[in-house]
Length: 282
Image 1 (cartoon, rainbow, N blue to C red):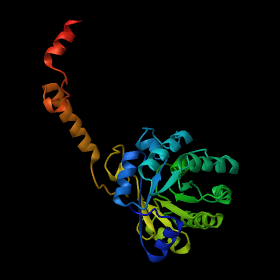
Image 2: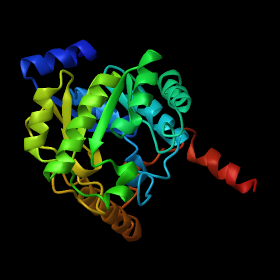
Image 3: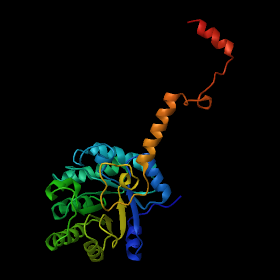
Image 4: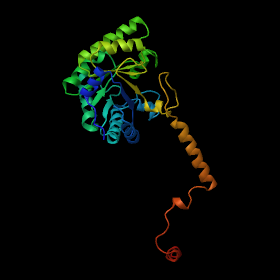
């Protein structure tokens, strides 16, 4: 059984140039498979709202949703570093709310750290959670919870002014006490600069290779989420096609009488005559 990695391991990986591979998971089976494969980290993202619950965005996701799914993932991957994603309005209102809700993730779901979105405007929340003894991962670039302000799910930092803002945000997040940073949908040139500028690990989801590790949404990489596929996704399987074909075959077998067969049933233990007497009683 592989040893669970920790913050010192991730810092050493950055220093040694070893890439961290991680993925989202929202349930026990997926988490178990990810751990068996040797995943470095697992994110229980609020993306579960779209991938699992069928919402159009991450906004409707609640604390109860996130904690429940974190609990399932922890049961499936007891020896993997778990990142709990703080949902919309669980930290934005006040520093106190941020600390209390981050604490719930740790107490109720045994996560190893939490992640929250935003730059300078959430730095007081990062500091408050860190001062309370918990680890925080920052997240800037395309931030789904505030995608309305960004004009939709669009890449960020593609001009000099917005790139400058992201660099300032990244530095502020590190100074606030975050132990790592996730960059989403920004140019690789900017990713490389930020990764070199910061002492903490800098990870990418759709932000190119020159950083300290890569994250993908499990539904995207496994071909399970069919609504849309971001440009930065590489599909490693087509689970949706496999499942649909399996369901079609099952339907056909049921309607044609090919399922169940004798091998799929439990036969009586007593003699046939005893059962015939039983049936006659009614």
